[in-house]
Figure 1 (cartoon, rainbow, N blue to C red):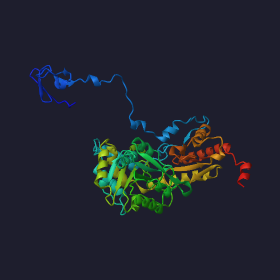
Figure 2: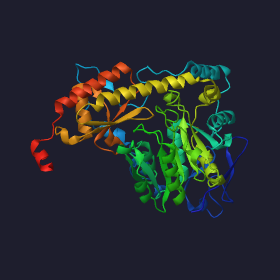
Figure 3: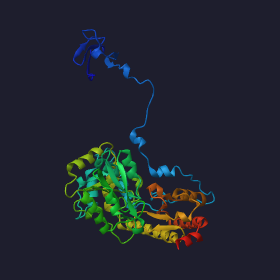
Figure 4: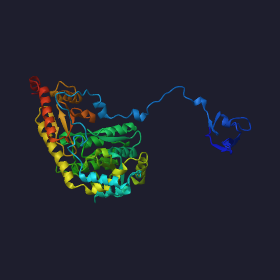
Amino acid sequence: MEPFSYMVQMNGNGVCGKTTVNGKTLNENGVNRNGVHGNGVHHVNIKGALYPIKSKSRRQRWEVKPSEMANNTLNPIRAIVDGMKLTPNPEKPMIALSIGDPTVFGNLPTDGAVLQAMKDAIDSQKYNGYAPSVGYLQSRQAVANFYSCPEAPLEAEDVILTSGCSQAIDLAISVLCNPGDNILVPCPGFSLYKTLAVSMGIEVKLYNLLPEKSWEVDLQHMESLIDERTSCLIITNPSNPCGSVFNKKHLQEILKVASRHCVPILADEIYSDMVTVDSNDDALASFSSDVPILSCGGLAKRWLVPGWRMGWILIHDRDDIFGTEIRQGLVKLSQRILGACSIVQGALEQILDSTPQSFYNNTIGFLKSNSEICFSELSSVPGLNPVMPSGAMYIMIGIDMDHFPDFKNDVDFTERLVTEQSVFCLPASAFEYPNFFRIVVTVPEEMMLEACARIREFCQSHYRPPSRDSNDLDQ
């Protein structure tokens, strides 16, 4: 049926005079000269305007269903944690080592210069309105200046400001991938990648990280997963949940794989510069000669303000492989929802310029100390195998499940740890890596020591040494 177009003219008394429907003049009853309503469809006259009534298309009953995207959206962490029976021991105060939020316990406040920058932005009254969808030019230039280096130069046009690093990851996946494509995701890895991709009809292929090599990428396995529909390789460095930091040689090996197969990289670098050992802390793009990279970061972790929701995408495209199309695609996607908070944008340049190095050093020093405490305390616990981290805010602890027959898996283990000791660690099944659990090392030092003592007590009460029969068989 042809679309309807109406032109209704009103006379001086507010009464419908002449009405035209698709070029045919109707009388005051909406009937043309042949006595037929416009296009043979019944019309109703409401305050001088004619509206078609399509009775045959009326639904007979309510039937409102969620979209396929909603049905396909699942956060593995929430799916696992929500199903756990978490009833703490009432005789022991709860210690939550599960939440990747450095502000939870109040022991890691942001720097005064960061707060002052926000106050100044508010007082200026300049940032109360809508910002451009990609962010204020001055704020984008500030980010470009802060992260630019001779090996990977940046200009304002290379920066897209987003509502936290999560939106940056969302935009990056959305601009690179179509339904039916696949992306390569680290295992263990941040659950958001899969949550976003699957909801968009994108297949997720998990490449292995190797705990015995401080969580380096299994390069052979990763390369074996690449095919003609692989549209993106995700690299998380430093890593959530592993706390690992890749050295220069390993990053170059990753880039060689991407270059061989012409696969762009999404680099999740939200923990960039949060490195606790004398290791590489350079961005992946600084080692790339040809592979185009979308680097996602933000204020959340390094500046200890995750609730401010300020993130960014840095576009590294030295050989102009992305060209204008990917850049325009990111602009278009950013226009769907104006994301980044205008006030935080207004404070961004001052935050980046004024935060003292001592603030960064103190944060890293604290994370390093707590990581060492946790690793040292749990390394001597029979049945546990911690992997010493090099950055970020996490440490992964392996569980030798053969020595803990009381538990079916890591979810059962961590659930009972809450019940008996009121210590909540995140089971690594949430990262699709069973028989490990993740500890967040941002808690106060005395709380970290207390938590480790309780974990030790828990393991001692449930640990079963290898039986003599099994030893005889091994011999």
